[in-house]
Amino acid sequence: MNQSISGVTHTEHPYAGGPAPLPPDLDEAVHRCLVAGFDGTTTVPDTLKRLIDRGLGGVILFTRNVRDAEQVRELTDTLRGIRPDLLVAIDNEGGGIGHLVSAGAPEVPGSFALGVVDDTRLTARCADALAGHLASLGITASYAPVADLQHHPLNPIVRTRSFGADPQLVSRHLRAWITATQARGVASCAKHFPGHGGTVTDSHHDVAVDPRPYDELDLAPFRAAIAVGVPMLMSAHVVFPALDPDRPATLSPRILSGLLRDERPPHDSPLCAGRRVPAFPAHVRSRSGPARPRPPARDPSAWQTADPARCRQART
Image (cartoon, rainbow, N blue to C red; front, side):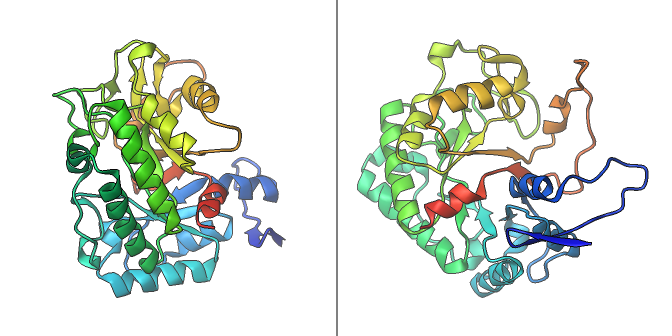
């Protein structure tokens, strides 16, 4: 039996000995909070089509999905042919950090270089060029800019992706980037909340910890991004003992339901918590307390949480 809710067709699936299916409206609500990756450059997998049919919030593209500009545009048109309001996102930081080189991505300086020059008009022009290119390809969300501060010499992940070490400098360039991006109708995403700059571990591969006390954490740039209306934040897969000694930010109610919601206005800047990394499953805990590693998904870069409705508002 099919049921249509908000333009989404739900099919009741048999659960042989498994949990009972969710009510259709709740099933759609859950899927709306997910963004999925997939393999291929022209064909949309049937599995992904079924997820979109059930209300999937969006898809994320990677280099594996990109051949050239015409192909990417055809692919995004195909995806929206399945459902017109589908969010299509990609990492697009500039400075060589992105997946669209073969699709003619504009060559712009990296964030650290822009911070050294410290001309917010130049930063806005670079963000405008990148966002204009995304819009021409039918991509409507960019997982940029990086809001982290680069002040730890051994940090392996932030480096030149950051605008710098000074929170005021980084904040003004974030404002310029976000404003220019959203003027093109593309949703931006400040990352990695509440900051990845105080770590010495690459959280893609192992557990990263920021040992600093609360009053030394790098929250100011994220406050600036929220104030200017960024529609998404991506969380850090980092443990902050001052905030939650047991869980990384991505899995911490104290950080995501406490700190983040205290920092942002109601119904603003929804969370985008990327679950892309092999180290992530090691943090999954049972209710009884001990960590229980979980086998990674077939595509470890596939799942995140997001609020596509707010991203769509950024495009209007």
